[in-house]
Length: 174
Image 1 (cartoon, helix red, strand yellow):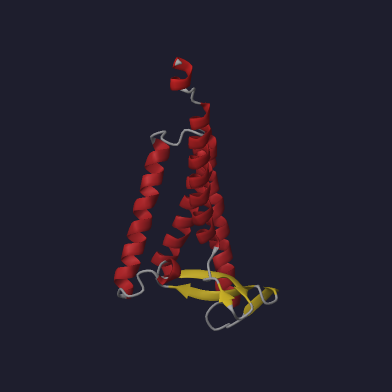
Image 2: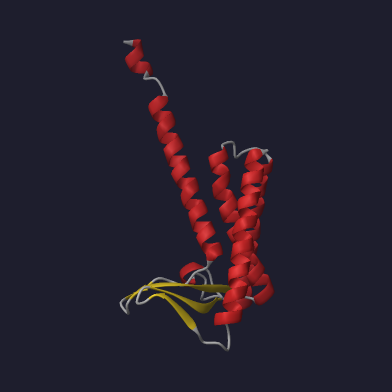
């Protein structure tokens, strides 16, 4: 029960932060405003962007409507899988509930944008002067990436800990 509360609570928190920040970006930085907010000069700014593709322009070669439907469908399927895992008790450790909660909230936030606007609002812009520019992203993207990273890290760490804890049967038999 606690795992479900944590997971769904984190999803709601990421979703609320994502949608509130995107509303702000649309109103302050969005179309017609052509404004950027310098946070750290030469390194970090808030700048409005419309992402009509997937991360790093993946699927950019497909027609817009097909791309939007594929990305929305993929996100909905991923959400259903995460919900099914949570409902069936497949996420047993409380720590593991954090990862799908963050990812779920981020995925829902981006699906809302794609359905409502036809694109995802991005506005977090990291760069190193004019030489390096990371693709613009949003809070939902951060939730998804951090959630996946936490899940991979916990899976690796738990597997390594379990491996070290297993008694050496060959050594014990000698």
